Length: 500
Image 1 (cartoon, rainbow, N blue to C red):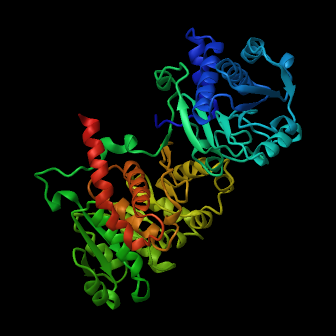
Image 2 (image 1 turned 90 degrees about the vertical axis):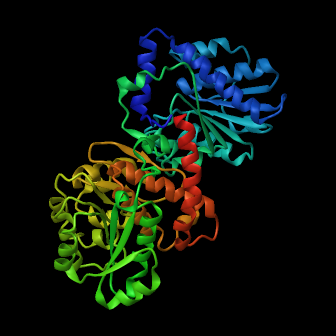
Image 3 (image 1 turned 180 degrees about the vertical axis):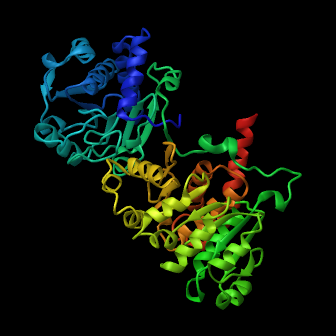
């Protein structure tokens, strides 16, 4: 269940299901039952439940949940923002089946609630919350009672994750069929609490008609192309990654990237080092090789060896004309290239030159954080002001021709062909100096082994997050590569189980 459906795609899933003969009220009954089940699991029988119902189908789901909870012995108060008689369609039928009293929604109705069910707005909300709805959301958040959100916390847009003025702060969210981007993108994810997708009777076959292009980043997305080592493999079959180092004062970033590439599985890794830093690199590395390379001409000569099939440029490399020349040399061949940090900032004044150098090549990955992204795409207002981080990364990939890894707590990986993945396993401990350098090396390590660029970027981002979770609070970037063996053991065990 890795597909993420936009508001429009989810509406199409509903439409196709109803057109195939499933009544809408059947779906609504199942949705309400899933909400009632989740509430009953959280709270003991007899708990006072406040259901706050809005004007649409989300409100209808709330009426169903209220009826079922009342039948099970919970004390239910249904607080309606619209009034039972003004509902339409399936929501009106759900309200008709509810036999209890319906109160006008007011903060006073929350006074003794042991749990609150948020059934005000669905995922498709596109305007700022105001008036009575805003007052109720603020009162719900201030009540101290746990909030169970129907589909998505009211005030969050399902496609973008945007907070529209104010939003419910849920302890748990039950959505239906598939999650939406807003469940993973910030700030939406911060409002959802635990998220569960319930089966309400929509068959997975509708996905082939919808053709979703957005996914949650998980092994199911890329495991079929993940390079699991074979017993008869050797190091030369696992690729040779190169990390281009900066000068003597900035060599740490290259070493972090090189270690990441090696731990990610590259058979060989070489640091291409300026001569001034050669001795320091040589003294500080064991399994990583070092080669003297000064400037673009020497890098181009080194890269004539076609066995060097993946390259990282940017970490600690310096900003300016010299870096632009190195990037041009790297992009002149057929190898996979990861462009990070200074390799991107160096093109801030002429990004078109970078896009031209990338051309139609398929194995180029850019890994900007938000600041670098804003610098490189500052001349592209439609990208910088896209509706969401997801759409910004997708548009940037289309414009540049590269895989774009837009980093952050909700890293988005986007391909020029429109595919995109949202990552949600990264812990806050990853926000530390050098973490991104390790990630760029890990991507190169997977590329060196022949993994397709989009899948390699997705896998590396996920592995990076898992390494952070293994290490926990207090991690520093040097630790990340050393946690990968433990992450790999768990992954390979899972992949083995999946294949049996």
